[in-house]
Length: 461
Ligand code: HEC
Ligand code: HEC
Image (cartoon, rainbow, N blue to C red; front, side, top):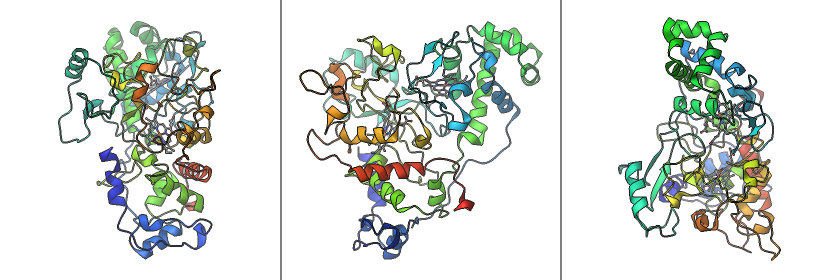
């Protein structure tokens, strides 16, 4: 995609001679000339240092507002749930980058704590710059399209089979972007929270009236009245919306949701050195012919000095294997198709988006125990194998049928499999071809991904 590679063009400065780097990268000479124009910069990079040290523009540190304090109490309060046992933190654990502590693909919730969820629980970190959901041209100068208009045109147009990238069909180069949840179906953290709160598979809190009854007897009742006035509990809908507002303020204000304390942040600012594996991983991550991960998981500081979030906030259909560990997947004809449903309903007719899910941040991804929207993988090694082998050796990724053929993209109905991204490397290699990444490349990328975990202490190194 043009915009995606644009930064690479700026980052890859005119080449000088390849530096047969000594020291830390002696074991594999790296094509550093692609990265830095000046021999001195090559030397720095070869020694694991960032040749282009920046000062990151981080969100200002402020004490929590009173509403955010209340939000924090609610976030950790199991009393709100139908079971009385689940709080937001049960699935979004602060010690695990606000993702689950266990390695289940989907979490268990509901009033009886017997209901399995349908999607992997995302981290709640680094959502502070998440844009509202929109569908617009890749060129941000142009106006984005009204979802309603799009739905109408989608319903009228004969639905030719097409991929999101085909320029033939109308609305084809319109890129969905932003939003919360794997399918972007809500925009704000406030709107978002009533999802899990009332979702029968999650906190299953019942009606606003039951929630209010619980809030009134909860330890936070006093704060509630102080903040919103003595009448607050008389109007359940209003009180619930204040509670959701408080939850969103906690997530927006508390620095633990965007600490920027990773080794990579330190490296960007010249306070840390990559090991040779991390450096090689960083280069493969950015190499358009190998990992090309940065095409979607943006890793460069923005022009305004904002730290990278490792997502372009766009949607892709990666064609992941079906996860049989999700009970909902035992219904053979049911598919989770992301943007086109079933949990999001407004884009049902936009079948060119079927199978597409939001690109998540990779910050703290190395601390996760379940990967992708369906949590089908549990280690980064499996994730990297998927990116490398999906089309080159599909029999290692998908179940193999009696005919000896791999059931490729088996978590989507056949008619929408053309939406799967087969153009962006590393997903552009075909059956039998050499994978875009060697085994060493994959291991190195994992080493680099570890540098995205928060909690790196500069002093120690
Ligand atoms: C039983 C587990 C569970 C509980 C409890 C839970 N969530 Fe979640 N949360 C999820 C799942 C699963 C998703 C992804 C759902 C989807 O994409 O459809 C999610 C998504 C989110 C997101 C969107 C994140 C993103 O990257 O887009 C936010 C924000 C969120 N939850 C906040 C909360 C809050 C606030 C609470 C408490 C009121 C809460 N959650 C309770 C499971 C849970
Ligand atoms: C074409 C865009 C694109 C490229 C290129 C890409 N990714 Fe992704 N990545 C995504 C999308 C979209 C998802 C979520 C897909 C889903 O869950 O259905 C994702 C998910 C992930 C996840 C799971 C994170 C989580 O929280 O579950 C990891 C890890 C990951 N990518 C790593 C990589 C690495 C490493 C590379 C390079 C080898 C890479 N990605 C290349 C788009 C991309």
